[in-house]
Amino acid sequence: MKIAAIQMCSGLDPAANLAALEPLLADAAARGARYALTPEVTMIFPENRDQLKSVAAPFEGHLQLAAVGGLAKQHGMHVHIGSLPIPLEDGRFANRSVLFGPDGGQRATYDKIHLFDADIAGLNAYRESATYKGGDSAVIAPLDEFTLGFSICYDMRFPRLYNALANAGASLMAVPAAFTVPTGQAHWHVLLRARAIETGSYVIAAAQGGSHANGRATYGHSLVIDPWGKIIAELDHDRPGVLVTEIDPAAVTEARRRVPALVNARDFAAPGLRD
Image 1 (cartoon, helix red, strand yellow):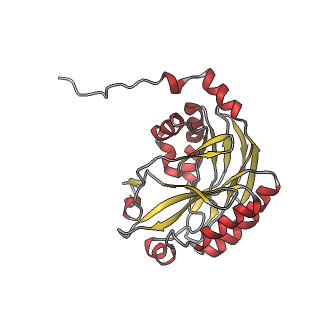
Image 2 (cartoon, rainbow, N blue to C red):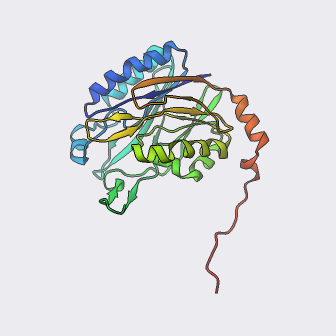
C-alpha cells in the first residue's frame, strides 16, 4: 500500500490553505497513494486566540472539510486532515483530526488529547488548555490492509497512547504535527522512531514547515518509519512537498514476532514512598 505525507506551510486564510493543499493531494494520488496525511493545523495556523475565533468555523457544514471530502472522492483515496480548530460551546476549541474515505465520506474524527501547558525558564507560561479543550478518547479506524491509529503532535511524547492504540489493533500511527525548529532538531526523529519501535508499527508524520504568517517557524522533515524503527522516507527540508512510500503489513507482523513487547507487557504497582 502506498501512503503519502503532505508537508505544508499553512497561513491564516483557510481558503488559501485549501488552495495550497489541492495540488499536493493531486500529486499524491498521481503517484499511487491510497492514503494521504496532512499536517496539524492544516486549514488555519492562527496567530492568537482572537484571530482563531474570528476565522474558525463550526464542524457541521464546514466549507473546507466539505471540499476535502470532494477531493478524496475525486482521487479515490483516503484523505486525513491532520487537524483543524473546531469551536466548542465553552468558548475553547477542539484540535480535531478528520479522516475521509475514497467515497468522500467522513470515516473517523479524533480530538487531540494531550495539551502543552508549561512554564519555561526565561519565557512566558504557555497554556494550550486556555485555548483548546483536550479530547478524552483514543481512536482507530480501518485503512485497507492496515488499522490506523490517530494522534496529533504533542501526543507523540506520551507512549501510553500509542501502546493503547497498538493493543487495540493499530498498525499504522498517524502523527500530524507543527513542531518548532529547536524541538524538531532535538526530538523529532528520536521520538517518532521510539513510537514505531515500541509498538512494532509504521509511523507516518506529516509536518508543517517553514516561516508562517503568524510569525512562527516550523521544522518540516515529514517522514515514514517502519516497524523496526528505520526511517524509510523523509522530506529532508522545511518546504512544502509530498512524500510517497510503500508499506507492507507483513513488516508489522514480523517486527512484533521478533520483539513481542506488546504481549510481554505486565501490569505493576506504582512506586510509593517508604518509611
